Image (cartoon, rainbow, N blue to C red; front, side):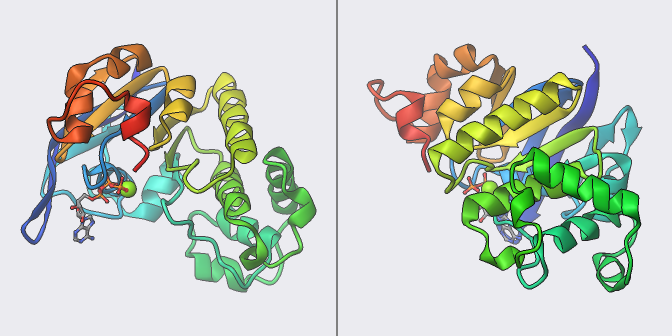
Length: 259
Ligand SMILES: Nc1ncnc2c1ncn2[C@@H]1O[C@H](COP(=O)(O)OP(=O)(O)OP(=O)(O)O)[C@@H](O)[C@H]1O
Ligand SMILES: [Mg+2]
């Protein structure tokens, strides 16, 4: 197995809050890797560090063996690391398709993308193709602000895919999404993974994580606590303790993790 993306001993404090405290994570090429942990354990901060939105105080991020620590978000995206946000970041007043065309301008600022009067035919075709893939092509002309929460998540996924990243970081893709859409998102991830895309997924929905991931890392208080297969993680008492803060044994990870 080859490590595609790696975070080594990352620390990051916000004022007095130690959001990351020597956190390490390896994402194997071709894997679907899960990242779970209680609220506030540092999952989104780790995503922000890896994708250049937050500079770590210490530690190293490598991608395909190269040190990318501290690289700007645009640069990280252009290198082939795509991500979605816990709260979606689509532009509500422009159409679904226009949002996609902004995504094709990945090495320019989104503003320049927005003000460009014409997109090439191939960009349009690619945008429509990915909208079709996630099942929302029929909504292409609507303002993105009129989409349901689940449809926005699908748009964000399409938005990331149009740039053809090697690894895709999803921050709570199933959060607030109905079961039908969750199953659709699972299927899309599986299909893309079969074609060689690597995924790193933060999610509180344990059924989703356990079904889709090859490997799961559990975070606790800014550090990686346990890494293993879904079955290993589920039966590890340290994991339940992390969620319950040293609680009893009767709960399952599925019951305690829906934060
Ligand atoms: N920009 C910031 N400024 C100040 N504190 C922050 C900032 N970002 C994160 N934190 C703090 O860092 C800690 C880790 O937050 P983070 O968002 O990474 O957790 P998380 O694991 O993603 O949680 P959740 O499951 O609720 O999304 C929290 O205590 C949070 O309040
Ligand atoms: Mg988060």
